[in-house]
Structure formats: structure tokens, C-alpha cells
Image (cartoon, rainbow, N blue to C red):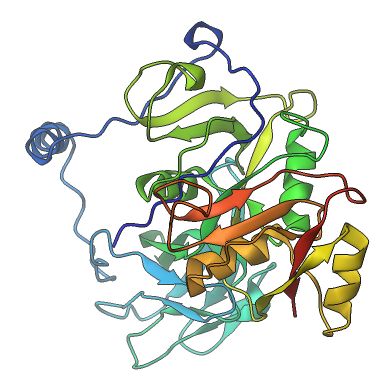
Length: 357
């Protein structure tokens, strides 16, 4: 079932016109058109070399897991050379030429490397199994992995994608629209229990209904925003898609952020009342918790269908509420989502509290 994340933008700021930016618009193709274009593409490529030592993984079969869970990336030997080693690597496309080795193994032992090594092991379900097991998944673990068999001067490899199931949310500075450099955006997401989203994560969120008019940083240093409903204020009457500003200066240029988060081990609850920001924090602490982060609220909404038609303070000083069952008197938007009141005056405005523990 497709989820819709149509979110209100309360900034009211003017938008750039189509003449002020370059667009990379993702087009929705019909199935017949896609099949035709794919056939042409394949016919112009060399036939892939048949693997001798490794089994081909299932096409387009991503491994999907949530933060905190374990995942197994499949890699099976077709045959065993007399002397060989297997090298597992995480590919980092934004760092061209950089190899992030996880482990190197042979028939008798393996050696872990880097950040992922201590959380990695080989499954060894049978003598031909060199599948990689990752334990206690983190947000940054999503991406593309390579299983490479090295036999003297010969080598073969297969590629597997690990997708962390989660939710993308737009995030803006308390000071207003377009105030984050890349590094500030990265830090802002981390402070809200997230990380800067990848392009593929933003694309998936767009296919699920994310429509947002402000441009934001992504993990690779590019800037984009997703549009479901084209309108003059959001890039003009182009087709729906991901609008792109391309790569930007990470130290000088300023935009909002698109953050990504996944499930947490804690829980979110709402305390009704008329609290100032500090009173809301104290109310959560009396329940052995603290005000929830923005990422916590999105996670509860995304994974637990959390629905609460009351604005409440969060730890960053914003006021929001999650709606899984849209109705007229709870934001007035037909799609589910997390509604925002922005950053009200922390002393003058009174709301409930969203707590996390």
C-alpha cells in the first residue's frame, strides 16, 4: 500500500523561477514505453560475462531491514578454487577511488576492517556460503556492497544493495528558510535522530507521496526537492518529479535539509496540556523521559501509525503533530503526514508535549 506524505510548508517564502535553476525531472513512463527503452539499452551493451565461481544474485532483489536489526547479504560460491580469498567491500560512490573494505576471508579465517568490520561476520550456512552478516544496523549502513572472489590473477564479484527501511523528512533551521550549509545540515539531521538522506531515499519518499517546495541538501552534496503536484510557486508547471539544483558549494551555499531516519527502540507519547516549552520539557522529565526529537515523531508516525490531533512541543523548539488518519479538523489535508506549526515563541505559546523514552 502506497503511503502519502504530503506535508504543509508554513514558511510562505517566495520560490525561485524555472529560469534560476537547472532541473533534473524524473519522468513517469508507461510500462510499454519503459520496456521499449530498456530493450534498446540492452541491445547496445555487451552481454555480461557469465560468472565461473560465484552465483548471480537475484536481479533487483534488495535486502531490506530496519535500524537495529541484523541483515544477511547473500553471496554463494558456485565452485571453490584451490586457493582463493573473498573480500567484502561497501561501495561509496561519493568518494571515487576509495575502497571501504569490511573483511577479507579465505577457507580458514577472516580479518575485519574499518567501521563495519566489528559488526560483520560470515554466515557459513554451508561450505559454499560466504554471505555477509551485519549486526545492529545503523542508518549509514544502507548502500551498495560488493562480494569479490580473488583466485590468483582471476577475480569475480557480485553486487548487493542493502536498503534501510525508514522515512525522509524535510528539516528547516529555527532561523528560517535556507540557512544550512552542507555541514550544518548534516549536523541538524544528526541532532534530530537522523542522517542526510541519499538521492535513492528521497526518490522512494517521492514515489510514496512526499511533496515539498523547499530545496534541501542530500548526503552526496547535491540539492533537490520532490514535487507531486506541480504549481507555479514550486518550479512551474513541469511534470512531477525530483527538481535538482545539482552539486553545490558545501561551505558557502545554504539550503534546508532532507533527513532520513528509521525505527528506534524507544517510544513516543503525548502529554496534553498548555505548556510553555520549558514546562513541556519538565512534564516529560517527570515521566522519566525527555521531549521527543523530530526524527522520533516521524518514526512513530511511519512505523506505528501514530495519530494525535494536537500540537505538541519537540526538543528543537518546534511544534508538530502526526496524522495517520486524515480528517478535516486535523490539518485539513487529505494525505497523512506530520503537520508543523514551525517554531513558536517558547514562552508565549502554549501546547502539549511529545515525550520520548
